[in-house]
Length: 315
Image (cartoon, rainbow, N blue to C red; front, top):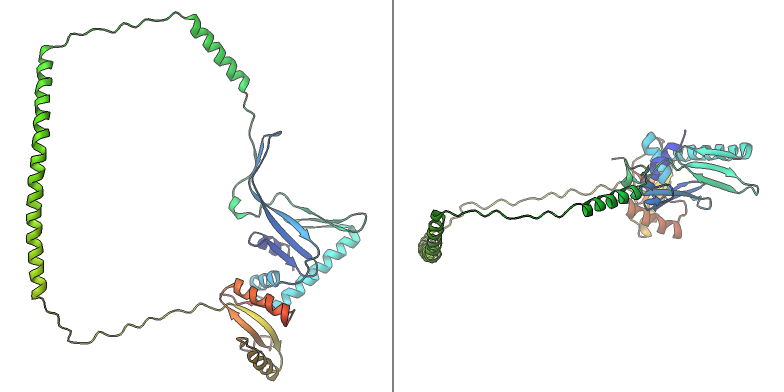
């Protein structure tokens, strides 16, 4: 199984993707860049780095492979281990190997692992569709020369004198202006009187309507002949799709024993039906979100079981 594509898929969604037994790929958002010397513009992107000390299995990659391939978590772990074995073998034999769309690995003279990220893939989803481009330099000298030439031509031209044309105003326009002014004065005086009359009529109508409403309210009588049926609300419970595995047992008696032991320790332990591999799984608990399950998993790993992992139930 080639797990390179699954690593690439997870880098779009998460800041850290761990390959158990090999190391972790970390992402950091880099802001948009401008290189003035080449007039190049680059959109924001995720920069990928590698940490060879983070090798513990966090369940992210294995769960993703198990879901996509519709296989078991144990088979996904085996596939990852086999792929890591091939990577290390390629390093020993050739001194270099590549992970498609992620980067290249090589060994230096001191046999230390060197990672070179692949720059052509942008894992920042907010920058989808954006690409780098080069903007041509603006040539300001030619534009300034044209402005100076234009100013010189304007200075050489003679000033042009504008003489406004006098027109005779007809006598009838004067009378029309006096008539319009009279209408304006009449409107200014009569409009407030008209508005006052309208307001008084509105108040009279409103009082009449309110009086009729009050009379109807006083005369109204309400009868309830039959009781109103109770309303039953059904609240849909959120699905608990994230389970922290305590173990899976061939013997059901062992599963029941661990279940009782975890319940006595205060866990909301659960047993789920026998799976297709003939095992009886026992859970520390189930959670509605991955964040809740991951937090509980870390507490269990730090205190009780360092091998606890999250089983994600397909929706």
